[in-house]
Image 1 (cartoon, rainbow, N blue to C red):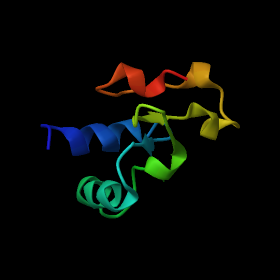
Image 2 (image 1 turned 135 degrees about the horizontal axis):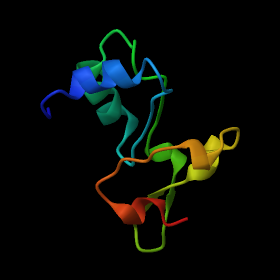
Image 3 (image 1 turned 120 degrees about the vertical axis):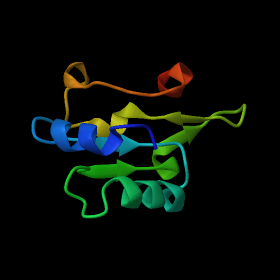
Amino acid sequence: MRPYAKECLRELSKYFEIIILTASHSCYAEKVIDYLDPERKYVDFTFSRDSCILTNEGVNIKDLRIFQNRDLSNMVLVDNASYSFCY
């Protein structure tokens, strides 16, 4: 785990809704979130691979349309792969 990850989540959750969107399988995502936030005090929602689009090349792309009731201009996306949001 990155240093201060839990502290960062705790502080950000005071001011923002925290949503995890991962291209990983839900069982993996849940294990990681259980470790970071075992009491579910910081992470509000989790979306996993079943919320992604599988491209013809076999890449899972995160589909931001799942946030249909939120203004994307008010979001901050943190990801290590910029292609994840190509749509």
